[in-house]
Length: 217
Image (cartoon, rainbow, N blue to C red; front, side, top):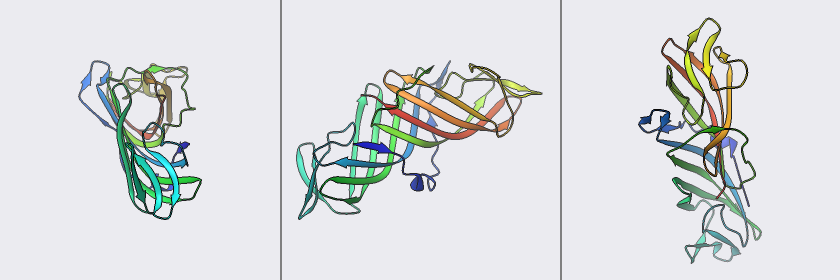
């Protein structure tokens, strides 16, 4: 089984991350929506779910959903909602692209909600099949606040550009410069944020780019 980005679909999406009301160190809830393509081998489950692909039959693609048999045609929906780890919910909204005796191919979107994130920078685990890559994100960050989901703080506008705290090395970024952050959002949930500076103000910073999330249930 594997889960990977369906890039062509992603380019058509205009979603952004949403944030719930903030605590002192950032939002108490983060929502990411990413385009996905999932390929599932016969006899295996969709990553992180209880949906199993049985195989191709005369009636179509045979799947087990909560222990019940269902037969799907090309273009049919196949959705799932659940909590692969504590305080993290996943909502898969998928359509069957095509299928063979060996593999079921699905495309759609995955919505990930992370509650009570506690970001810590560091190495990330990227070998989990439960992956949501290249979710489009934009953030407006007030002075002395953090880019959501990270330990990067906006300290204000200076002659050298946006002054950032909580990053290794050179702390300044000018317009269109990149900002990369990797680490844990919480236990078993990893984030790679890759954004660029869109606007630098005296009291606010705006960035936009992509976020990739790995969940290791």
